[in-house]
Structures are given as C-alpha cells and as structure tokens.
Figure 1 (cartoon, rainbow, N blue to C red):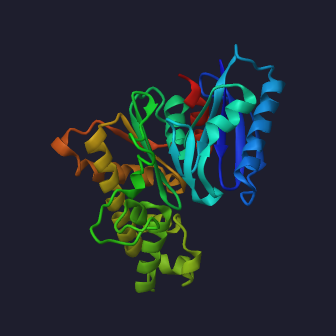
Figure 2 (figure 1 turned 180 degrees about the vertical axis):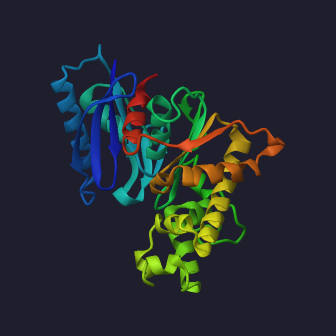
Length: 314
C-alpha cells in the first residue's frame, strides 16, 4: 500500500509518494507563492498528487490516501485548518476541498505533529510507540506521539511544547505570553542570550568571533566558543541547556515516553547538546527513575512529509 504526503510550508509545497515503511519513493515540489489564495495553493497540491497517481498507476487498491501537514492550528477531527498566519488561512476545509476533487481519503494535521509521527515511523524513534519531539529553530515546535498516534488534545492547537511557561514573568514570547520555553530554548533564544553576554564581555572569544557585530551571531558560534574554552560562551550554553532541560523534563514527567527527540538547527550540535542535556534533565525527573532516551532526530525535512503520508495509514 502507498500513501501520498504533503508538506505545506511558507516557502515550498512538497508532495511525495511514500511506502508502508516510510520511504519516500518520489516527490514533486513547487513554490508556495503564499500571496495567492488558499484555493490556488491547494490546487497545486491536487495537481502534484494527480501527477504521482498517474505516474505510478495508483488506484484505490494501492493508494490509501493523501495526508497533509500544515502550519498553524489544525482541527484534524474535522479536517479544517483553523488558522495559519503565514499562509493567511482561516477556517479552511482542506479535507473536503481535496477529497471532493481526487476521490481518495484525505487527512490533515499540524506540521510539527507530522514530523513527530515521521520520526516514529521511519526515523530516530522507529520502534517506539510513545515519543515527543522538540524542534529548536526560530521557535520551538513540538509533537507528541502516544500509542503510535498523534496526540494533540481534544481541542485544536494542543501539543505546543514551546509554549509551556518555564519562567514566571519572563521574556516576552512572540505568542504574547511571558516566560515561554520558546523564548529561551529556540535558536533565536540562544542567539539573544549569546549576543547579550558577548556585549557584556568584549574580552571574550564569543565577542571576537562576531567581531563585535551581534548581527553576525548564530546558534553555532556559542557552541564553538564554548568548545574552545571561552568562559562566557560556556555560561551561555549552560544556561541555554538548563532552560531546555526544564521543558524536556516537564514532558518526561507528564508523559514518560520512550524517547525525546531534538530536531531543528540546534540539534546539529549532536553530542555537544544531547550529553549535557541528558545529564541536566536527570536532575528534573520525578522519582529519579530515568529511562527515556534523549537523542537527535534524523529525518530532517523529510520527517513532515513522511508523517503526513502516514496520517492515512489507519
């Protein structure tokens, strides 16, 4: 049996054919051109899906359905993208729009949830029934898998791991709340912390690596400086990991999953992040019984496409 997955992003749309093992057989992509109407964007999804259907002679005997991973708040039960600001989507019935035109089962879910499912099906959490992913990029994305299925709560918009509040009256988050994990544990949060510390310590390697220009700071530089022994950078990384460990520890204490996966740009640090993070998380675990594995996600940009395809596996 085959599945079609759709990764709907603000820049590109990727539509791919996926097998039962989560392998991508072939994919097509087009620019999103998000200034267009949502109907025009979804017409592109339909066209690329039909290309795959024709190319591989798919029919109801060998194609289970089409799954869509969308940014924003998604009502998966009713097939509606409730709100996606960057695509100007509001209350769009994605399932009806596509299914009425292609004649196959259609499912839709949040893109971060799809990425978590993809990692469980074919990635770093393969073989796990329960796993949680934290994606550390511009923000902090999250997805929860329980018993092999996406858990996003009864109402739309759940599983927002980046918006758990970890500091009372803390830094202002883009969501409007204060003290969200995202403000501290995202790549953006790390860059902000590093820039502040570098500006305070002009003698530091952290400052020298950006030549005093904080616009050059990125999430890799503090790790590089810390590895070189720079005390200012070491303090930045220790603080960053301590904040991230609170969020990860909270997730473990609530769900006790088999695996916590760390994805996104910061995860490229691999053991430089995972080893100290694991040690710090252990300090936050209720009862001291720590069995959850913390590791790096491995599918990258393919995770969302694979997970979206597998929405239709049931």
